[in-house]
Length: 313
Image (cartoon, one colour):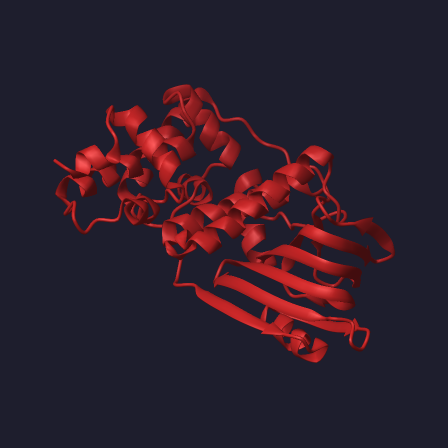
């Protein structure tokens, strides 16, 4: 993935808020009462594959319009009512989907929002690999998640994504690639799709060859921002077929194997790095581990010592 950009802006003018959302690929019109305390602040991290926007909008306001991307809206605070093609919902704690070409209106007050922007073409590529269907067209059946459990999962994924932006780990390509895959899969799993994509099981010989090819691909490309989707595409398997092959022949998942290979690479770096100048958090994120504490636990489980102990040798 190419380098990302970070956008910070704020205004108290609805017309200026329209322009700021236009920069995020939206065509919107804000409205608020005069002297109603309207304020708009955005912090958006933009990667060519996706973006994460954090918005804090004060006062009573309404907005209408649409986006070029598929947008998952996660309202974390405030009052927020939405209307999409005549279907209405209450957003706090319950993510919803804005699809290109669908009329959207909301009425809100003092809201904090995390938006996940996924280009339709990028999401479709993930879906085609996931379900093993090169002709699949992603069409969501509606704006709401399929269950409260899926709503909670989507909210957690969005919250973690926002934390990665705030902590600075989003700047690392391996972290962004993993996050794009996680958010894309969350969208496909949490919102209803039109149709019923089905998986095709592999034969035992097919599983064995898929596993061997995937292991080779991971070992050759672990330093690059590859994801499980990339691995499956490289070996001509769906994600379910890929993971079934790893469970049968490696006793783990493809994602876990990728993490193990990257953990080994991180250990190599630790052994040759300068203890005085090396930042462990940065080194972990560089190898795709945005949570330093989790990296340390995984490292200790794998090698029987803390990363700091290896670095100090």
